[in-house]
Image 1 (cartoon, rainbow, N blue to C red):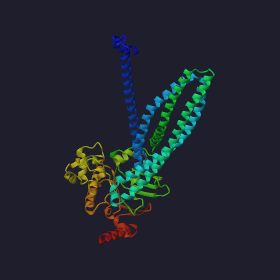
Image 2 (cartoon, helix red, strand yellow):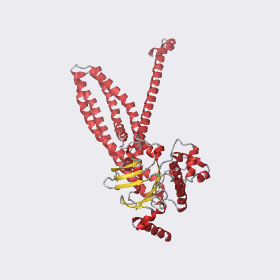
Image 3 (cartoon, rainbow, N blue to C red):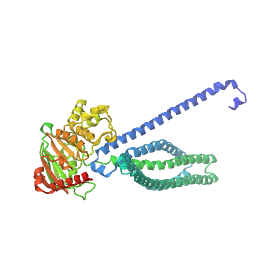
Image 4 (tube, rainbow, N blue to C red):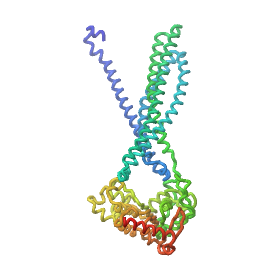
Length: 546
């Protein structure tokens, strides 16, 4: 280059520069290609890992027992599906990209250090393991702090999720300020934990920097001493120092990654906590009773049960009940007497603690749960949930392979076809989240159609009309009268007027059957059932005069 500047051999500039320029362009192009491959592969691997974890985690959550959902709030579960996996993915990408580069530099420079001066390298190898052990111990403490901080963040998310999903209830009771105070309290607690975690990570990184700078200073002192003894040349000292500084920079980058590693490990630990959780009750596997031989005779024999979340409180004790095939059995009683628990046990949302429940003589614990819930039993509760999709798809949820004609036929049986076809878009009408755009009676009839679509042999009605007004109740009751014929029906009722035509009425009190009979026979006894009727009549008269 100096020759060209001085004007010598200027005509050869192009020919002389062509080869190095081409080599440099080739190297730059190769670097660009490898950079593209590296970034694309890292992004692809990270996204695939995150997607796989999300799918596996959601599948694991769907397999869990009902007691799992009793113990964990929705917001906490959703937080692990979203925030925790996102945190793990970000940490994975960052640690791989910067961690591999820094690790490669450390290994390469460490080899160079050993070649230049085995004595000084050996001295460094004495100090570094002690520092690594100390850092590992501090790291375990910081990981625990990070896990606590993320759990607190999940609790804050749960509060917000609960308030937003139940905004109508919040608004109805003017509890906006209270919900804000509760959310602020959780956020403040989360802030404190994260600030403490930041303090710990900051102290760790500050200590790391002191150590790394101390290594450079020790290198200068030891190298100068060896230089004075003639055991090391000045060039070797400079090379050793440059390699040590490269290691220092790489270790500094690794120390900066430490905080991200802590958060990523904590997030991954929370995700794998759910992934490794095995349910006690399988979703699939077991016996199926052929439809042509299914009589649907249900027997509860000496059943004792308490909820897993409240093991000390016995809900049902030595409970015996038979639901004869094709008959309607109603269970009545005061609130908290265990009526809905009977329905939950028949659906096998929970397993009994003692005794057994059988269908046609087969213990339901030996039956395939997916067949039991998906085909044998139809369940309609007080507040059915509709999904934010069309009316057609909400009904088809009862049997995903059903044709449009079968869906419409089920809607007609449930007295729902008339109001559905009156909608501007008919069966394609979107009902909104949780069915907020349809009335209570309409929502209930859609739920009845959904249950009917799978043509169940056993029908459970858990206070299916108690939340409706008189006119809606009449329409829904007419639909229920149509669909209960020829089926084994279990009615959980609060309004006693809806069970007067039942074949058998069972009165529950504190988990124990105290009376059994027909409406007329129980009224003549003037016992628990008669007192319940009197109390309801008195309450209705009080509401009427108010």
